[in-house]
Structures are given as structure tokens and as C-alpha cells.
Length: 557
Image 1: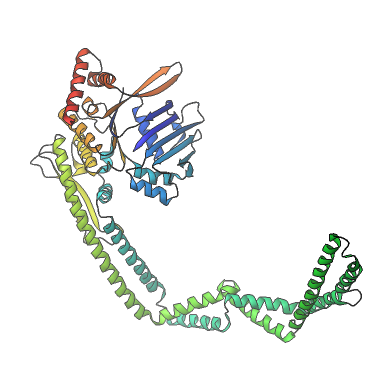
Image 2: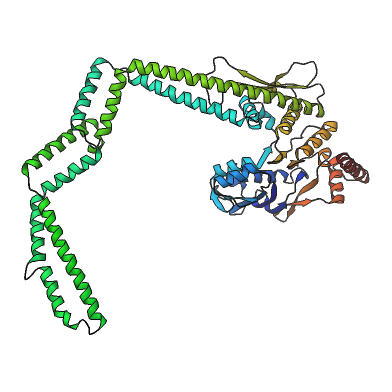
């Protein structure tokens, strides 16, 4: 539920703070007062694309933030936990738009991407625009609407998983068909390459050991000389490091009890002597293991030269020859067993396709069942919206030649007849724009999940009046019964049904325009409804407004 909205330097709004309450809130005001600016701000906070035009003239940036309560929204809470952005029962969205068009976004104080903002926003708010019925006429949107409102998410996932399993097997089959059926001449060439690699290729760790041994053999003369000279420097009886350290120890030993400083130095010299003698022992060991062997050096050079030739031939490093060998072996094996592998993959493809067809059929059945229930709800709402005798159908069809897909093989079409005696036709072919708008509202009401997300209706009641306007008000009230609905409206019949009414007004002062909002108390609401009835407020319009408000309240009791 939306709790608070903050707007600063956005469009024509210098600053605006507004709290919101549960239930149905009607948002009214004069044309051009700035009612839709709040919806625009909310849309940007939910991840819509921004640009510099939203920043108020003369300002460096626009600042937007919205606070939401999450007590009744498990989907949003789960999303926040999964992304390590959880902050208890409330959530704060913030977005800053710079005058150069760049924007930044935060969720609970943590910087996030616009994609993340959109993903969470879809779980917090559902916005219904004035011309949404145009998009609702698209077949893909109808399919998505059916799937997102149906209770068959597991069936959808099962169909997608079965499709991916078939797709992976089919890809393997295609790769086999493209690369495994080698002509005899190529088979012989691959076998020659494989024999060559099997004779000479080594695992990466053995190549490294070979190169290390070659470096040692190449430098063994210099190594032996260095080891001998080092041993002399350490072990010479008179000038060696060990003898020198021992002499120093002998000189200082008589004074070790004079103070702690002498004892410390003697300790360090003793440690140095031990380390020096250990170093001498290690030098001797290295010398015994270092062997100058010209024949071994020649052998290593021949082996590395051959590996070098092979690495250049196959375009890889020396330590990458073994994987090349394995790939050639697999290629040759596949070529020799091509028919066997092809038949095996054909059987596997057929099995996976059969599994997919079974899951797709289950998805079709789930969609059909949900479509039937949805159609019944929408058709009932159409009667309330002034289309007595109107019919609504959700038609789920499966093309026989449709290939496998992640979404199954179904096509969904909403079919409508707004008048009795006329066969239902495609939603996109409904003649009257007003009827289409009302049918769209019925669909929105039938599919809305008011207990989870805030529902925002932006002048969706445009073009209706009379009893139909009363019905729109009743429906919006119904949507908000267990949650929250906000509706920008010009209709008094809709406004009086609201639990509370928010008035938006615009004022010009010198060279500055300001936009203000006020949650109307009883008498102020009477004045606003009277204005909505006819523009000019009079005692008669006030009396009418008061009567409508009282009638709406008594109906709801």
C-alpha cells in the first residue's frame, strides 16, 4: 500500500508531500491542475524511462520518493529478501533525475538499477492508463493477462522446462547432423591428426614440468657454479659466513650476563648460525640433484619442438593440446557411430517432444478453465456498466502446425459483444470507443489483485456518465475493499463513492507556479463535488452534492 509520496522540482511542482490511506481515494481538481503529475511521478518511481524534461525549469534535479507498507504484499517482501534489500514492513523508493537527463535510483537507501526498480515496482503498484484498452486489444497482452492472473504458475513452469529440455536435445541433434557425418577423406585426416596428438600431446601439468626441466638443464652449468660458490661463501673454515658468525658468538659469549641486550644479540646470532648451516645443507642437496646431461637436454628440446609444431598447427598453446586431442577423438567417435547416435538422439527428441506436448496440453486446459471463469466475471461486470445483454468470451486455440515454444502453443483472443443478438467479435474490432473503455475497466476489475498491489486508475472513466458512471464508482470501491485504489476522476458519481477525496489545485504566484493537494473534510468535499457537477458552485449544486454523498454512504452501509 502506498503510504506517502514526495515530489520536488518535478515538472511544474516545486514541492509536494502527500500521505495516502487504505481504501478508495478519488483524486479530483480542475483540468490542468496537475492531477496526473502524481501518477507520472509514481510511474517514474516504478522504473519508467526518464529524461531532462521532467526537471522543473531552473532546478538542478528532480527528487521523487514513495513509501510503501508491505504487510499485505508477500510478493514484494520476498523480492526484497532475495535481493538483500529488505527493511521490515515498509519500503522506500527514491529516484533523482538530473537536468542533463541522467537518473539514479535507490531502494531502502541502496543504489539499484532501473531494471530492479521496475521489477519491484510491478509487485507494488498496477497503473491503468486512459488508453490502456488499445494495448489490451493485442493478442500477446491478452495471453500475458490470462497467465498472470491464473492460478497455474506451476503448469506454466512445467511447460517451459519441458520446452527447454526438448530444445537442448534438438540442438544436440542438429549439431550432430551438421558435423558428425564426415566424408572418408576427412575421417582419414582427423585420424592422422589424432594419432599425432596421441603420440605427443601431454596434460597441462606435464607440459609445465617439461618446460621447467628444460630451463634447469639449459642453465645447469651456471646453476652448479653458483651452488659451489655459495657453498664456499658459507662453509669456508676461515672466511665462510658460518665461521664468521661462530667467531662473533665466541667474542660475545663472556658478556652474556651483563644485561639483556647481550643475551638478545647472542640469541639472534645463534639463530643465524642455525639458518646458515641449514642453508648450506640445502645447497648440497640441490647440487646433488642438479645433473648436467647434454643428452637429456637434447631430448627435451626435441620433445618441446614437436609440441611447438603441433601447437602452431592447431592454433593453441602447448598446454592446450590435450583438449584438442579429446575433441578430435570425440569427433572421430561420433563419425564412426553417426547412425547409432543419430537414431539415439531422434528417439530422445521424440520423447522430449512428447513430454512437451503433454505439458503444453495441460497448460491449454488450465488456460481454458481460467479463461472461462474470467469471462464469466467480466460478462457480469459488463451488465453493471450499462451493457445489458453483452457477452464476453476468452477463446484459447492451439494451432496444429505451431512449433514448440516456452509459452506453449496457445493463442488467446478476447471476444466481445456489447449488445444482445450480436455474435462476439475480436476485442480490437469493437466499434464504440466508449464501450471498449468500459469493457477494459471490467477486465481490469475482474483481474485486479487489490489485496497485494496499489491500483491506480488514471481517468479510466472518461467518456462515461449517468448510471454507467455510478457503476464505475461502485466497481472502483469494490476493487479497494481489501486494499488500496487511487482514481483520478472528473466524475462526481465516481468521487462520491470514494472513502476519501484528494483535491489537487494549481496557483500562479509572480513567475512561479505551485501545485498543492488537500485531503478534503466533509464540507470541503461537498464544495468539490458541487464543482464537479457543473463547474459553477451554487446552493443547488451543493445540495445535490450533499445528497449524492449521503446516498453513496448509505448504500455502502
